[in-house]
Length: 208
Ligand SMILES: [Zn+2]
Image (cartoon, rainbow, N blue to C red; front, side, top):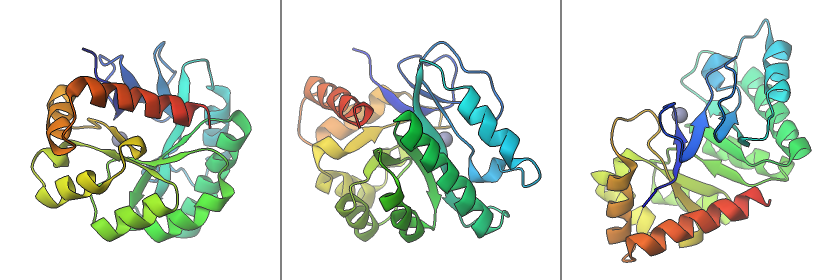
């Protein structure tokens, strides 16, 4: 069985969404393209945004990862400006937005009303209350390696509707199969059903 890896940075994985590095040329398998807050070049933002617009080929699945990060030494106002511009691109090209967020969840929620396409918080690893608020605002959550050992995150996953999440390896070195296996135990469904559900969720966000 093939397991879809919703957000990763490894060119050898073809069943998933490969997140392009800044200024990279897209591969011939599904990818996401965006400007991560820590990659923002304050002297050359237009060129970076043009790269996003010009590399929008058939395999582009989503815009991102983009978002807000309170630990990155780029002014928050600039981060918000670049985030909003990428939301606008996503509205134009009708592709979902994969979001990177560090300690800025309520600011990210405030941007939701500007987005016409689905928004997915990748690498979710925060508290139940934040998960509930994100879900109440129609965000999807993508979970990664931490689910394998973090008990409170396992509880959050238990409470997350089956049609509202994805699974990913991100930068971590482990097999996505392990995560699917763990999640099938947590959600008490078969691996086959979980796999099918994730593919259905993908279908839903792709169609807006
Ligand atoms: Zn990532």
